[in-house]
Length: 159
Ligand code: HEC
Image (cartoon, rainbow, N blue to C red; front, side, top):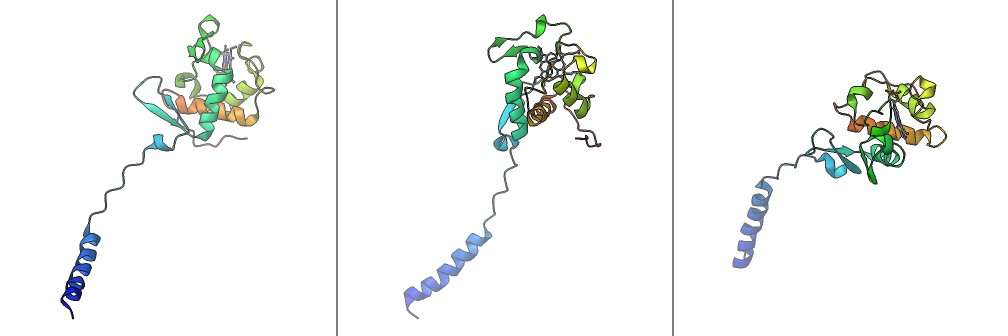
């Protein structure tokens, strides 16, 4: 065996062995914000960003197009109308109000409007304006941004 061959014969396997011994870096913890379609600042902790999935992000769009004027204190276009209304509409982040309401009840109020549900007629019916998917999406958005956080009930909602 030539000297060069001998060196290769010794070096190549040792490189292979050494490199296979290297520690693999521990997988970085998954950052839920990286997979989010959109984020929402927490209403109680501005440092915290809430990741929104696709449906919730669609719901945010529905909300900003239709509901923000009454259910938030400020809108992308400036102050809202909320403080002028009696009864004052709940903020959309108001988990105290919404968390105890079932998905069915929330969807019915949104679809049929306040007066059909024995609530204020100032809450308009959206069943002719929004599709059932848009109504489900805006509800998913409300659940995502609720403070205190919404915990889904174990009982599945009927369709
Ligand atoms: C013109 C103002 C106005 C707009 C726009 C509006 N709401 Fe409302 N909403 C109200 C008022 C006022 C109430 C409170 C009714 C009550 O408590 O009697 C209400 C109540 C609700 C409730 C029920 C709360 C409960 O206690 O049962 C839901 C859910 C809701 N709104 C969702 C929406 C969604 C979703 C949109 C947009 C698609 C929307 N609202 C747009 C005024 C509005």
